Length: 314
Image (tube, rainbow, N blue to C red; front, top):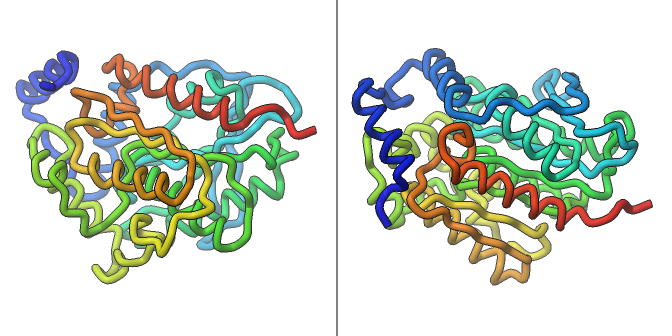
């Protein structure tokens, strides 16, 4: 189908204002522009019962976390969320509106992780930060009112890539047990050569050149991309991974590799839900203030989490 009418309107606005791709900026300026765009197009941040900023020991030094709680219940399930931004952009603020929404709608504690960014800290720094956060939350859940027996991971774009990598690490390290994974248009293979990757080259939206730029900054050496923690599609097998919801966008260069990952999970016996949002572009999940489909995707994600968490364990 054609671009969604709201996406068409967004495209026209960008054309009129002379939109500039983030990969054309210096890294520092790209980070500022990215955050400004997310804040402008996202939903207004919902109030939650409590928000707490914490710092825990990480592999490369103190690791910032932000904990969102929708209520004062003692033992809520917990979603550990990794923001998107091509592993080189983004902060905890990038996913603030998403985390607040999911905390309320899924009635769970949400913990956003401020992992290290490339190119200053290339692969695998971000993966190890994210896994360290999951392990800390599993061990210290009581400190943040979380039930570590009902723990999910999730993220959008590069954050979805990191969530998938963390599930591989947790499986192969025999824990912590992860209940579910929320993968929103995740990157899954650094050498992905797919129809969606070749066709989606619109200069006014996230495109194939965006993908190439992010990978080139994330990987210190191209050969590192063969590591399954960088390219989860390349894992030797996908058995024993948590149930997944994979969300994709029709006009997104990462669409096909994300959908191939969902197929790989399903063939390995992992329960998978795959939803492609027609007429949408990469990033729409964080554009709930601009695109109605972003709100629908958030509602779908919350429903998946509620079902996956199930009742309290005791």
